[in-house]
Structure formats: C-alpha cells, structure tokens
Image (cartoon, rainbow, N blue to C red; front, side, top):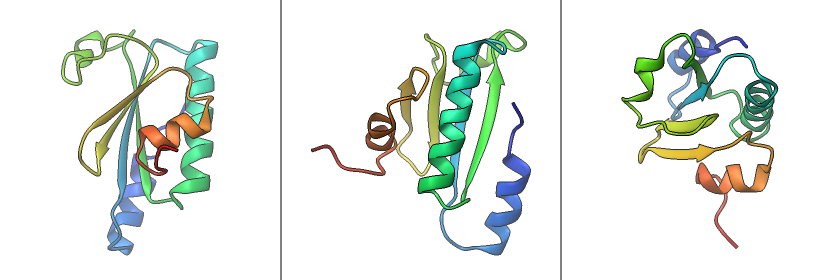
Length: 108
C-alpha cells in the first residue's frame, strides 16, 4: 500500500476545489486491509476525480495513533476533510454504503 498524500497536495495547489483527506486505519498487510485499500482507491478514482489524499496508518507499527481518531475496529476509514469527520468500518466492498458514508450520495 502506498500513500497518495504527495500527489493530492500537488493537485490541491493547482486546483481551488476542496480536497478530500481520508485516513485508512489497518492492521498490517492482511487480506482485509489490502482489500479495503484497493476498494477505497477505486471509489476515490471513480467519484472524487483525483482530488483526494489517502493516508494509510498501520496500527501494528503505530498503535498509539488509534487514540486520536478513537479507532476500535479495523479496517476503519476516517474522512477528515471535508468536515464533519465521518467513519466507515470494514473492507469498503459495499460501494453504495461507502458513498453514503462519505456523504457523496444521499440515502434512499
């Protein structure tokens, strides 16, 4: 998994449109963690047009970072920006649920 924060920072300087800042908490490179990252990347590319930054935080390496965003289950996606902060737990395989959770699509 590779963080795309640098790419998004460059794009933010070019564009005045809001950038989505997303944090994905995982526990190592498990199948579920890798699937969550792949699903998130696909959703971002399809629905955010490259205007996003994904920060992957491996709690195996940095367990103390779970406290700041109050992480109790993994994988967990935290939308930092745009506010308000939102959280989605799971491998993000249900695209509709993720879009609603990120407030990209209204609930039907």
